[in-house]
Length: 138
Image (cartoon, rainbow, N blue to C red; front, side, top):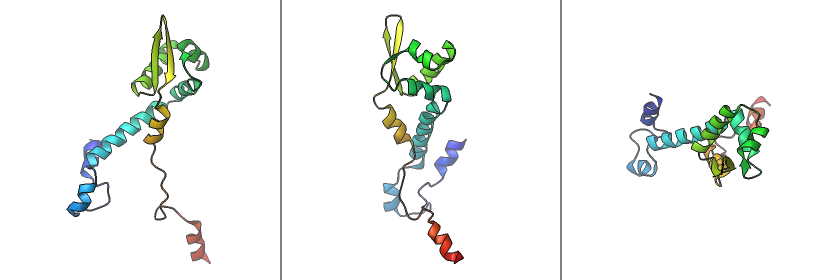
């Protein structure tokens, strides 16, 4: 299974015989892989075009499911499926109002999605500088 193989790999870039001080500050690889799996699941929830369209429809605020369906013209059973996926991911909240169900974005939806993305780091060891290549050619 891929998760168990990831758990055996040292994701910090240090060898297995690294000093205790270094390994004490590094979280276990299994915890990191579980976090990445959770982040991937959250991003997968919005990776489907219909679900992304639902999120766009809910940006204006609390919206009746009938209005969501007017903005995302797909069959009702398919819309219900996508709404369930987004609810289970914790990205939207449903409120029953009589026979109707209103949906809204969860308060932390965008923050959670943003946190699921890899961090944008400014690290000169990772950045490819075009000037390095041109100095060798000259």
